[in-house]
Length: 316
Length: 272
Ligand SMILES: Cc1ncc(C[n+]2csc(CCOP(=O)(O)OP(=O)(O)O)c2C)c(N)n1
Image (cartoon, rainbow over all chains, first blue to last red; front, side, top):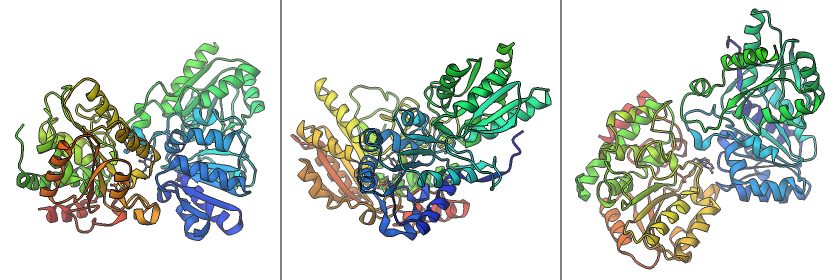
């Protein structure tokens, strides 16, 4: 397990997407909050300095200003670490962006706990809970570099507020470069009928690994990438629940109010089945190497596998 | 715990700087620039000016030190270890899984850490709270808080500055580490926070401006701050980011990368 090819970090896909936008669009304005090297917005700044603003360490002011620029007809990107955007600027996201439905793309990096040694203050374990608390905001968490770039460019081409969580670390490659992904459409990556493994971000590769292990035991798992948490793909999830009768949801987030909660609500409304959840249980994380953290906090293929066995036992 | 003189603190700074370099090299990540710029003041606090007992970190009458620019925590860990809060050997665990020495300060994990910081802009408010509680309880402790000149971009810092002056929190001393550099570059280019002394004075703080690497000036400013009454006190410490390691000095690139083995050896040789 775990011998998947590593691609680049999803934040590097953001850098590429911004370069493309810098070269093709004149309505794009980008803001950062003193993390332009880390988030890769600096790449846009180098090409389009007149439409790039490093706001300083001022997340709330950055979001308010971005909303004003968006209100004047621009497509505006705001970036910093996921934790800082959502936690420091939440009321500005609420009042100035989500409520008036401004065309602001909140593209954040260093999401989750896999940023590693910097520790809990920089980690977002609650960003989906907050983003989902902004009605009407599209919420996306891509698993790898090719899918991230496509989804970011689609968001740039559509009006309205979108939240992205991207990662710091190199991400295992899940998609071929020419595989088309679409905002709002969950991707079925393997089509089993015994149990469904739903995941996104770093947990997607872990779920694919767990599915391989299960296949060796004669259990066919359906693996679904729910990169878009809102709008949720009810059809794909409802069909999976109906056809497999058991589901595991795995995410790099608190097990409350993130992917697990959204999927559980969808399944409850379409076809209730036994479910198990892999994620952070009522805890912040800490400093450490990404792989060590994933192990300590229960976010590995083994943890998905154990959850699959539990849910299969409940399915009976 | 013995109280060191200014001259002894100067010598101690070498030890502290060596720890900083060694810890960061061992961890393979972290923030040398802002740790080295803060070394004189944090050393002066732990070895002379703070009233504290490493064996009773919960003493309600202790002076408080809050490192609001939490990424500079290696300088604090180095001083705490040298004071006896924990074994010096534990410094090697910085940023490792299961370590008490987290990448940014975490309250409750390591005795003596007063506040969890690392999301910039919050320490002054927490310091205000400690100062306010000291007044309510009639305790004579002082509260020291160290801020970055980039960190003070955050609006919360200025809300806190207003609050402290409005409530005449004269048991509060803020030290701004004015090393002219933030993460993406020079503060003058990213978001200018100068003129610093004039700003703090306009916000109602008694303010002095010193060379933050001149130990005598550091001692004098801290004494003045402790004695000052009727308003909070601000020390604008003019410092050099990366101070003591020539290739790190004034280089924004050394904000947040650890030295490799070769760089570590060169740095230690320079520090002496
Ligand atoms: C709210 C928040 N935004 C961004 C960061 C990332 N960050 C870490 S250090 C830093 C620059 C800090 O500059 P300054 O306060 O001047 O510190 P110093 O130069 O003394 O290291 C930034 C932007 C953070 N830790 N917290």
